[in-house]
Image (cartoon, one colour):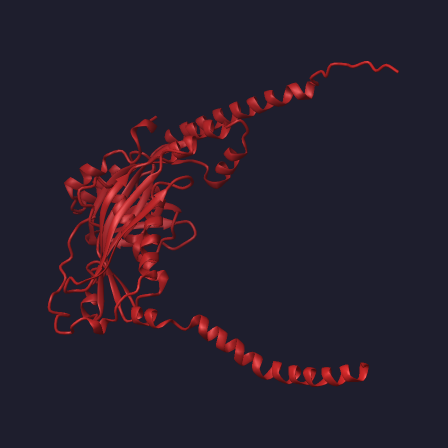
Length: 193
Length: 201
């Protein structure tokens, strides 16, 4: 009895799979890059409604990592998030305002999970494009008992400096030496886009 | 044989049935009390209050946002461990009236700026590393506790996550350390030296 041995041929599905993966990675890369561009080109929302900011920590009455509007209302520095009543401190109690830079990966946990799921280390390539630079605004203020508080906000690039100037115009003292140090890169220079 | 077994079993069942409902709640209460009641060391710790001073960055070029984040996270984490009666902020006037007050001074010794993107791309590099010297002392500058504590972010999380990890480690170190009772320090010395807050964010 003879058997005819046929060499295994690559099926069309077998050929398509790597190509599909490559296309997926490429499209995600392009999408992320364009998303970053769009957000960086977004108009700076200043004025009576304030600037869009993310409260990182320290502002009394505001939730950590809450998104909202940071504004100056009369003599108060106010943070208004969508789900909570506005939190504010008197500008007179603000002792120092420092502007810095920070670079973070966009997309949060879903993006991190997606990157982990991309095969052939494609997630790492995505990470190269999926980061965005922000301004950080560090505010030091005192409460009624004299206790010192510190708050950090994350703002779109260029907005923190505007807010700082506005606060300085309202009479907030700024420690020049600290500000000089703060302008240094928050991350290693290699990451600069 | 069967009759003897039955005679054996019946007192046992009786004892079990009488013992369980009467003693079980008491036993459970004792276990719960043992779990919640503080040890003598913790009890000594609760008599202290602590005032967290602003972070002294020393010679290290640390960003002000990191200084603020360490300070705020320390206040948060020290409140969580429940070892101190009260946790005061730097400059808080109500801390002046506190008889048994410890002062937490934190000096940054080492700071290695990392990068979230570098971590995400390479996995092995880009870690943000912080190292601080943490001193817990009395008003008359008697050092009760001194430790060098580290806080790093190696894989996931933003750079500021290092400050949270650092504060958590400082709080953990203080929680695990044994501290003397406030009465061990001379009452005459206490209150004579008002601590002058130093350092700036």
